[in-house]
Length: 230
Ligand SMILES: [Fe+2]
Ligand SMILES: [Fe+2]
Image 1 (tube, rainbow, N blue to C red):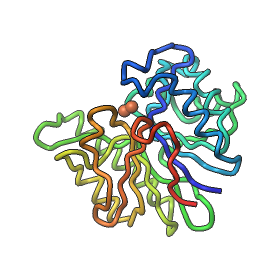
Image 2: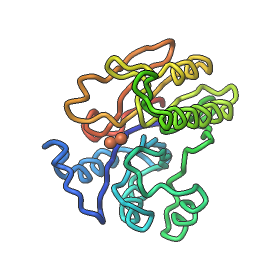
Image 3: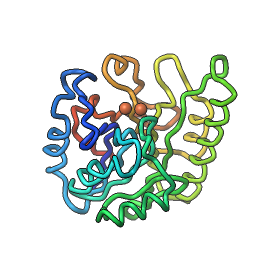
Image 4: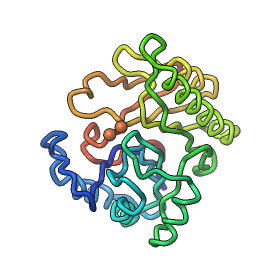
């Protein structure tokens, strides 16, 4: 059993969005994902760090969910900025049940225990800068902070592996509020996605205030799920 992560599958089985506009490496990216996931086993767990499907609602994302369902192991999903299909947890779970999806769980105001000692925590996160952010941004960030803290608290004294969509540290930007929470709860990791293509030059990976940061957006990891902990 091992814990993996990858973000930004950007699937479009129904909506047929040509993904090679993101860059040549996105051509046939679903096949690349399928091939990489084939190395995983049924007891592995993969956290998918947002931007899962281009579908505009649950129905339009159906084929993308079924694709994820067909991949080995258990999958834990969180919301990205392009997940327009995102609905309430209860509606989504009901939809999953109706289409036979049994291996996808939702990280939203909760955490998932992993093995004896670890917990999978997280939320979407947000880009917010005091000088340029609007009142609306500030509200979204404060909601996201609440969600992250609920998730971290729910993990109790387990080792906290945190997964976000937005990086809390990127280029010259730092979201102090999120970094404070990660430090306060002693998060082991901060794994994020969202950043693609040329912007990947500005990602931060490494140690920040005791937490290991890492970008797992699909094109940063060559469409291969990354091992987080055995
Ligand atoms: Fe994104
Ligand atoms: Fe993305």
